[in-house]
Length: 520
Image (cartoon, rainbow, N blue to C red; front, side):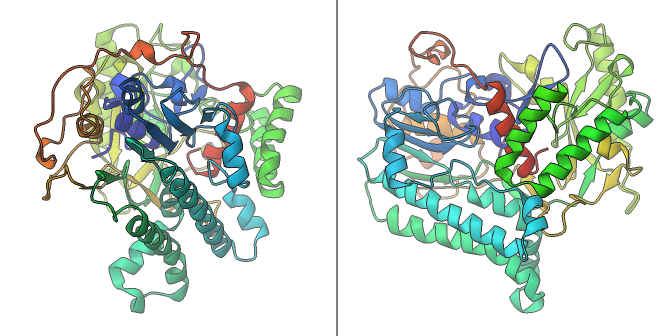
């Protein structure tokens, strides 16, 4: 089971810290700026808690960490570390030791941390966007696998952690076709659907072959294969803030010409310019127009904050009360008022039904105190709602969405071929093998259980701040339960200061990437 919500930054941070989002502080790709309602992308510097590879390094273990999200900028390890998708680019802040960057450049001159392509640009300019998308993705997969093999063979690592991202990107776009083929069989679906599904099937078959050849030929290694979340069909998009507005809990501003022009400029840039030009366009807009970010500075700019009590943020049902002292124009002045407003939001959201079937859209609604633990629970959403096991996702209240009258709409209406048809589920997978692994079904476990289990397999003491549990039923020996003396204060650079996050230009690159991936 993944985190709540089951989104990449929160899930991977919980994997390598063994902590709940309330402990490590990350719940989405963004965090709220305390001085404004602007959203800032998160990176590894925003994660509170010690990653397992830092603990292993400090205990003298040799480690290699590759392509794990929420690891930028890199931290010194006893080995090699290459950042994941939160790295804006492959530079000296994305690899440790720094001199290893040149080695990667020499051996993999086209190395990319993240698959870089804009789907809208591809749809506009390609004669066969689906085929080109699949080919580029499978080429990127080959690059991922080649780097993994190269790093693995460098030495006999005590801890080797690497992530393959291609499955996620392919499934977001092609999931519906793959699910249709699996449900009805290859002989009973249209050839177009089969061709789309083949992108996912080819990806998994290639990974399976690589695992069989490179990893399962040794009896001396303990292996863990796992996902940070599962996948399922994306059915609808819902503007939850419209529901809150109809209940009188949120107010919208009138759309201004300035915001409309800005949105139109960004969309035309996406359709007409190659992806490498997007960052330049954003920079130009910021310098000449005074715009913080061409697309993303106004994700919530249509909300009238001085008359809003509660609002929804992100795609996975994060709900925030507009609290005085916490938000710049907060209306909620007491804890009792906060709880009352959240109760009103719960009634409004859970009573809203899909007009197509007359059934509620919101199937789960939880207050943060009931689902999060840890010292950073105050960063978490005040409540989290789930729409039919995440088959529906929320959309931001931008000016373009205010042009629509419907609260519910089909996902990605601007796409003809490469829009998202798949979305995350909490149910992921885990498989373990090796000399210290006991055969059998370990049942349902938490992604937070991986960190203490890996520490036990390394025969290292546990950190006191773990929220997860050792998967004792899966291990052949009795794990130790000693506590580590390493503290979270050790997450620092050589000068003793906490590692910083993004600069302005880096933030623009990350925003552009998240837009291409469908998270904005």
